[in-house]
Length: 257
Image (cartoon, rainbow, N blue to C red):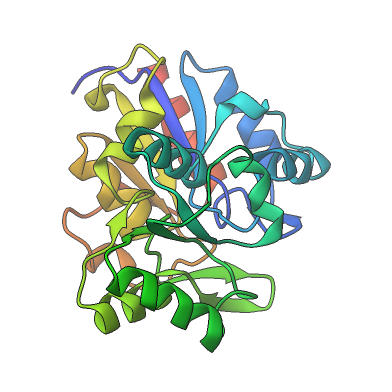
């Protein structure tokens, strides 16, 4: 097995849930930084821009820099620019900062993120009509659900699926678990996928997605994890740990060998 050179770490559900950090996560991140690993934080979070997300994590006591955070919003903006798409942005206002300067006149695409305030009939119908007329349907990601402070909640995936079903199209997905997302996250880290590990609470989007891209995946039993998730995905996790802190202990032990 090739020596690890990089660690990708999920945020929501792994390091924190809302405005509460996971027990011991801040100290564990400091321990992870002492290992000879490049670290990048990868997230499907679409309800806030990267600047606000960094500010939230800093308030929670996590030591990280904005340019260490790679979001599905970043990947989505890159896709729009590369393909010359002018999107109808189905995003929360708090996420729009990451799309400043993007041309949204006469939309030829619909970009769907987690936008509870936008998921009402009139907005969904506007998106449906655009897609029916040929606009490209783009999903920032298709997560089915996520963990909030008050419990599990619907992700953007069900709303993307509704538009797919109604318009008879397949959305282009950008974030986890898509392989290009993980490979783009490794860009600039001087690391092959086989030399990277992904740590996250989502067996499907974090772990199986990363492993299909050639990485090792460690599933943590926090956040959105539900009993038996590790047996519901293919490929299954390289390893399952109770928490992020336990996952860091495993990596520390590996580097002591």
